[in-house]
Image (cartoon, rainbow, N blue to C red; front, side, top):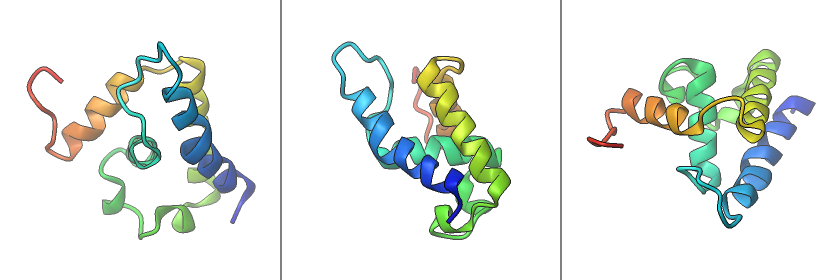
Amino acid sequence: MTDATTRYLVLTRQVMPLMAAEPGCAWPIRNDHCFQRVVLDTICGGVWYDHLARPAYKHLTPQQAQRAVAVCDDIIAGRVDLHALNRQSLAWRGKLRNGA
């Protein structure tokens, strides 16, 4: 496993769920698997499992792992809109509710 893959797992399994649980956090998702879905869908440009074998973290190229970390860092820093990324992920999956 690359350093970037390990960092992606730490960010999505630990760091971002802890941040999402903080009072006042307005992120639309809270769980590790949701962060992984959004990040992986974003780097794949669609539903991740249409592009990667399962489990995804074992099949990320070094470049994909680096992009995943960059997306996580951008979410954490507020440089990207997590609401928009989540909506796009849900739209790719046909799960976007009206008004979501």
